Amino acid sequence: MTDHAVLVLRLAAPLQSWGGPSRYNRRETQPQPTKSGILGLLAAAEGRSREASITDLLDLRLGVRVDQPGSLLRDYHTFSDHRGVPLPSAKVNAKGVQTKTSPAKYTGVTQRFYLQDAVFAAALRGPAPLLERLEHAVRHPVHPLSLGRRSCPPTGPVSLGLQADAPLSDALATVPWQASAHRRRQAWATEVTLEATVEDPAGDQLAADVPDTYDLKTGTLFSRRAVRHLWVTVPTGRQAGEPADGKASPGTHEHDPFALLGW
Image (cartoon, rainbow, N blue to C red; front, side, top):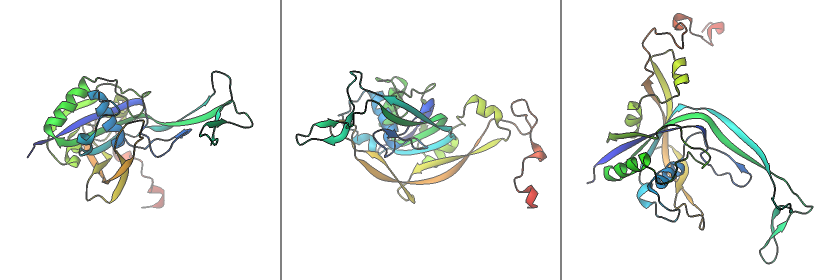
């Protein structure tokens, strides 16, 4: 039986976008990295073509921890044909040729959604030889790495290295908090509790983000995987009583939203 290991990645960038079911002129993003997006990153790191098989990657189990959720950004912009001709419509004629808009439309609108200033820790569990090869590829990528879209390069090294085999929830609990330096300076507690999602055959929810191929000619079909949600508590690196960002620790003056109700 092949030994297993866990590969840990840090996914951080000014902008990330992990595509969902949306298409055409409105492209939304999921709140967390998708398995399709992460496997695509690994395939690009190894230099695989879009037509290459990804069968060996599909069995990797994925866990994602939200270290810094970021905020949603909508990119609104217009587009037109550089030749000054009317834009094509969604209709085709009897010969299967796309027709022009009628009345003529020269400008279109697209909306793209991104996660702004988000940070995630991702753990992939699988055969050790495969993960060793992927870890080397992420550190020495053949193609530039991106977080969901080509316009979203990562900030800093992506690989946090290999860990010994362990359940995904345990592996994520051992990874230090990966939030930005600014966010960590704001923390006043000694621990922080983070949302996580792990792939689990016994999970009570489904995620439809497992690709069959990245081939543009055939298109990608997505299958489902079972996942479960949990919370992971990790140290912030701050000592008890240590001031946060130059301010005194809240101590007994911590805000209590139910205080006015006498609870």
